[in-house]
Amino acid sequence: MSDPRVLSRRHFLKKSSLVPLSSILGGFAAAEEAAARSAEQTVNVALIGYGQWGREIADTLLRIEEANISAIVDTYDVMLTRAERSLPEAARHSDYRVVLDDPEISTVIIATPTHVHRQIAVDALEAGKHVYVEAPMAASIEDARAMAVAAQNASDQIFQVGLLSRSHPNYRSVFQFIRSGALGKATMARAQWHAKTSWRRTSPNREREMEQNWRLDPELSTGLIGEVGVHQLDPAMWFLNERPSSVTGFGQIMLWNDGRDMPDTIQVIFGFPSGVHLTYDATPTSSFDGAYDLFYGRDSTIMFRDNKAWMFKEVDAPMLGWEVYARKDNFYKETGIALVADATKLDAQNIDPTEDDPNMETPLFYALREFFDNHAFGPYPPAAGYQEGFNTAVVTIKAHEAIMNNSRIELDESDFEI
View 1 (cartoon, rainbow, N blue to C red):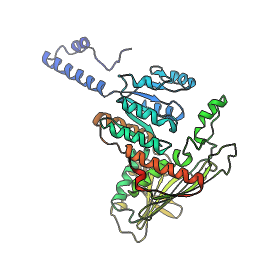
View 2: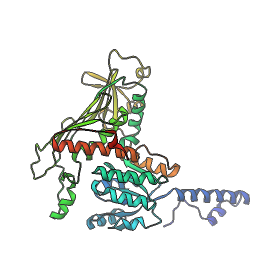
View 3: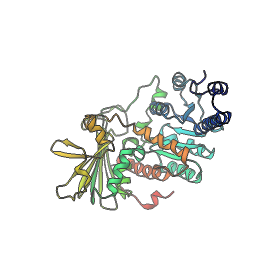
View 4: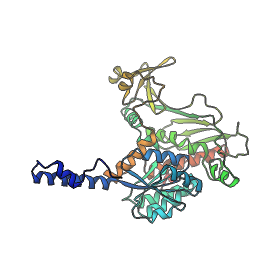
């Protein structure tokens, strides 16, 4: 079916019969040039992994004009059948190496289980592809380092890790607030993730059940701290501008006694060289109080919740000036100054601070949007490149080790060398 937005040369000339011929031809040439530019900006993508998160990525890519999902790769036939229904024009393969050999595909997005990221990413980079890989980057330091080295050697290619906060406009905005001194001297940090769910997926047979529930295998997964906590630990390292020097972890099975070895409740304390400590806990045993991040300082405390942020000033903090005009939201006995870029718009729309912001996209969208902008204007170092991905992988892997052993681990600068 032809695109009604595109004029044929004959139709164009007929409609423009009263226009000088030079103008007609010049205008048509400009239209052809614009169409050519648009075609050049289209990025043919292979999505490797079509599980729950892979399908979320696919839905998001459909909202990014430059992205063309050319192929879906999954080792499970049921997922390929599902892809055929949702994306009938995309090719379907069970072997990822097929898309690496396709010169028409320039980019791969890796949404497979974490423990198989390494080989796919290294092979893709060596094949000359641009790579977006989900976080955490890997489940072992050896694998993460191999991926980082491959990305470092492929300097003309884009390698982005799915550390979503790095691309989110609200996180970037708050980063500037913190860098400007709004927090004052940082004193401590705290974060949590609470969501009542077993984290176990049902499957039609034993083999598929084991494949589906790799997150519950301590040998294949870094558990709650790696699969969930990475997205709260990474912004803490970014905002504090330092890496942890120690990690103390505790892990227990408190509710889901279903044969798993992976703790369903964890507490972790990260020590930073500055003396700041980040305390973190995560559990799928309770949903109370949800998920949030708190950064405490001498002058104020900043809270992130649902990708929105507020600043709570101390009574003796210096005036910054702009906060007089900012939107204020009440939290029990505290008043939070909204640190979102569109706070005025939210206020005008009479949107409660606990409601989702209809003016914002998902964190995944912003990360993928940055990835495709890099195609158009780069390659340049992404906000979450191989170094950021490697740093968070090292810390979460060490934290997982501490959790499994209920121990304290010292981190050395050499641990972060690529």
